[in-house]
Image 1 (tube, helix red, strand yellow):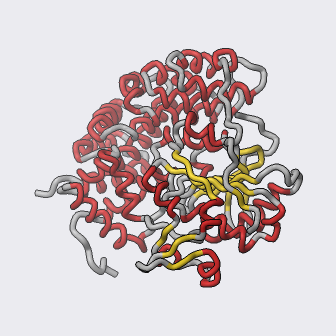
Image 2: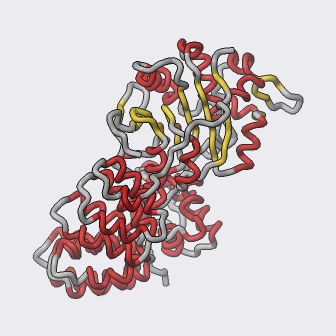
Length: 206
Length: 286
């Protein structure tokens, strides 16, 4: 019989979590910080330490572990911790924050109305993607309100795209009004037409 | 050409809306050619969930009410598992992955391979059989194969090593003759040697406290499970898998899955027989 053997006894050495993740998250070595970030995600007091670390972390993989930990915690505090990254000039940081918020939509929900009226149109645009993860009624209410006041065509386009998946027929009047306000933006008109068709198609049939 | 058999409850716009969501959520792509196939299964799921309209079903699916995403995916995927499933990855294991893993290491160190989730054992036993049949160096190395699953009943069945004819359908007759004994009721039992060569353990992939004790592996087969997880769980599972790989170790996913959509931790490796993912060699994270 060739050498395929039963797993050895005693079992192999396991992977040890760091002894002190609160110290490890500030370590010089990125590997130590990565392990600490993962450990803090499971610690009751870990969110604050992760939030603090996120503001200064430069290693992409450690940042990813911090975002994953914060979204796993899924508290208002952890959602608030990632918000500053939505304004970052670093695309990976913005994307990481967006993914983290999408992964904890209900924790992010109380923060979304304010984000959707943020002075920065990029923040409003990204927030539309977070809304996508919400239940239909919440998503529809937030995006219909946005469409009726929004002045940036690209933000409207993002909202329309999300509504075409997450919305329902109650969004149709707001879509029509938006199309009228941006009559000189043919791409938005086309997006609204497609979204309206989809929402109409799923409306209760008489 | 008109729709050959339009079905109630799913029109063209609904079909596209569904497809876009499914792609974003799971990576599964349904083209227009699959429309009838998709419609049938959606209608089945609407009936099963009591959804009167597509809109109400789609809302259920999007919010994963009562685990509907899993039910939906199951309706589209081959749930039965069998020996030598996705054989191209086994070919890649012996042609490329083990060659890389054994290039600069001492034969005194065992090669560790993890099949997770392993269900009722077909995959880890397939790995054992494939290595015995197809890897000339099999006698030169200690090889440890471990199968793990969250379902302890499946693990019990795996330890029994008894399979029906369908599970063996892809195995060459000579392999069946060599490693299986026929039982009276049309089933087959794996030889004791093979059963003894694979260990089994329970694990929940999103719990680091459960993955860590398994140690580190050279190759992990993690096929068709991440597709079921939500975004947060998928990322946590990816980190746990990363942590249990040795630097330079490989992970093989199902053919509809992409680690690049989940985590930036891994490198993509394109080999002749399969695309797999690797923990960077120089990386000491975790």
